[in-house]
Image (tube, rainbow, N blue to C red):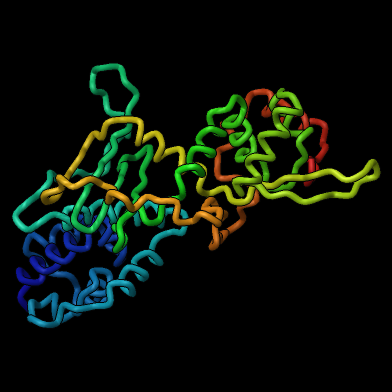
Length: 341
């Protein structure tokens, strides 16, 4: 067995898969140091070869350098790799894998510095500005926006549609209506409150009391949020008459929306443009009100919960101090919050 060749092949396929030595070692049940020894001229135990080939997405023959034997179903390989990782860590590891593959978006002969995960997403540029270490890459196929740091990481991929990005934008008037609503006093506070509480129906009076806002202001905000399909409502028949109760239509998009908005409001820290892109991002004339008779603002058509997510996606600590005090009081006196407040 050609030990040196196997080590070279393992190193080659591991790098192509965007895996570190530690990740490969963990996937097959050995240490990262053992993988390093293989790649420096050693060889793995023959019983490990099937697992190594599976994790690297190649055949065993490919580890021996046999041409034409390197093909494997990458979806199956990726699925097997993710299944070997604890569920709580899978999304983060997948994000890291995507970032490590960014270099393959570049044309042959071009390269970018090897950039692993940063310690923090807040770079110290010496100017006192609070910025995120955002990476932006524009290629022939589309756009990538990414932050890769231990304290914050995300990656978004935006392949360009056949007819351009603008084809799928909502009409301008709907954006104006949404942004105008968000700029109104109390709207962001209301949305924060709704994303910090258990997902259940509530009435305007409860939200107004919690936020110390007037009932009229909250009721008007809720009505407009419902029209934009950010909230939905039902009519409840109570002893004193009918009352409207509201619930968040969807909650997962709120945090990405705010992150992307923050990225839009700052200059990119790392901007990579692959190829000649003097052409504008949007194709002229494409952004039109093609949905004249339809409301383009919508709730998610596919929304899937994994696990128990009765609580919202925002951390509890973002709730206002008064809100936390009231939650603590419920715990102290043993009372339970009702499903409809």
